Length: 151
Image 1 (cartoon, one colour):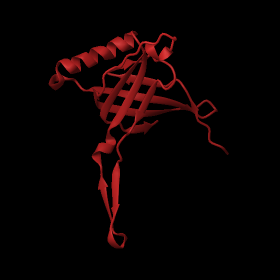
Image 2 (spheres, helix red, strand yellow):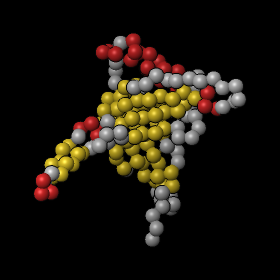
Image 3 (tube, one colour):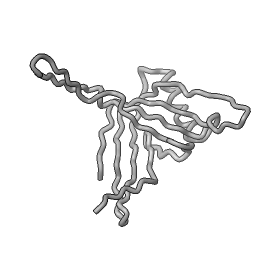
Image 4 (cartoon, one colour):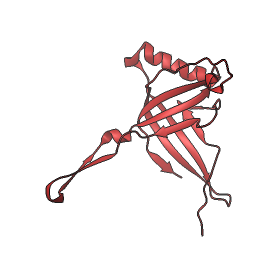
């Protein structure tokens, strides 16, 4: 028997706010840029293994409609971070993927994000040929920990 995964109706939540003003394409990408372990092999095949705690860090790229209420919300958090970095309240959030099995059952594939800060400014462009990308704000954040839970 084959296994089915129907994806849709994902949710992005940051600081208890459910984001709805998402743009086009990949509206959210959660990546893990660092390895969780290292392996080094030496003489006679002897191997050394090391836990890499930075492997817990995740990066979230979020594409929002420029000027929307969600854009204004994140822009306010970014402004507060830049105004007083030492006094910044770290962000928390969830990236929830809903996965259906084709017979009506749904599981939540959830990343529980904590310790978040903005790592890049929101860039801008102006395009006279009507490119839609000029109406998108892209936020880049890093979280210190983002374990995955499937329920």
